[in-house]
Amino acid sequence: NAGVMQNPRHLVRRRGQEARLRCSPMKGHSHVYWYRQLPEEGLKFMVYLQKENIIDESGMPKERFSAEFPKEGPSILRIQQVVRGDSAAYFCASSPRLAGDNEQYFGPGTRLTVT
Amino acid sequence: RKEVEQDPGPFNVPEGATVAFNCTYSNSASQSFFWYRQDCRKEPKLLMSVYSSGNEDGRFTAQLNRASQYISLLIRDSKLSDSATYLCVVNPMDSNYQLIWGAGTKLIIKP
Image (cartoon, rainbow over all chains, first blue to last red; front, side, top):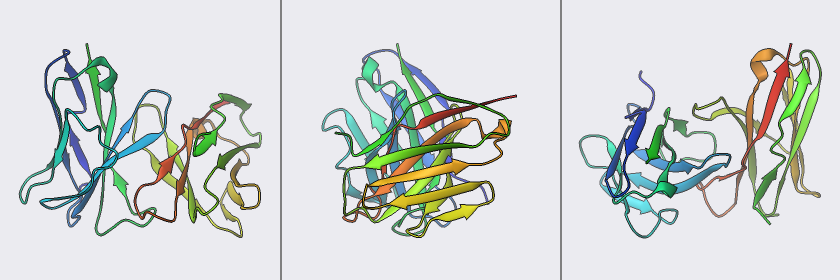
């Protein structure tokens, strides 16, 4: 049973380009969470999705960021017109149901570098 | 004041020593607490939950002090492989999934 998969693992974008980060949850998991980790900081919740629904996006910046989790395929975190401040590690986690506490399983992360 | 605060370290500790670090939280209504371990450039992994009565898992002991609003992690007989960043995580009672993460304490075990 494969764990949470994220790709790409490393992504370099120039300012103004778009970044697309993908997350495939563990088999049987229908809940996906995205986090951002800036250097030397803890993880910050961004968005919680279920299949075809955004449940809570209170941690997402209002502009340039969007997320989806279609019926088929991975969850995608999209960042338009990237800026240097978007450089961070983006982690995805999944759970089989609404996660209580330690039921979120993390992917290896995507490290975004904006040049 | 940050919701979850940790000493960033690094804590430089000789192999075999005992090391402890604390984490303070601001929301007195917080219900559950965890320690995660994060290796350099890797994803965080759950180390242990922290129960009110305290709990132990091998060389690791976690304690909760609700009155002073802090949790602690004690590592005995430290190994080189314990070198990592230890993240304190708090679950406020009004959310099942919006965990509040500390910035982590970096631990370096030296031979």
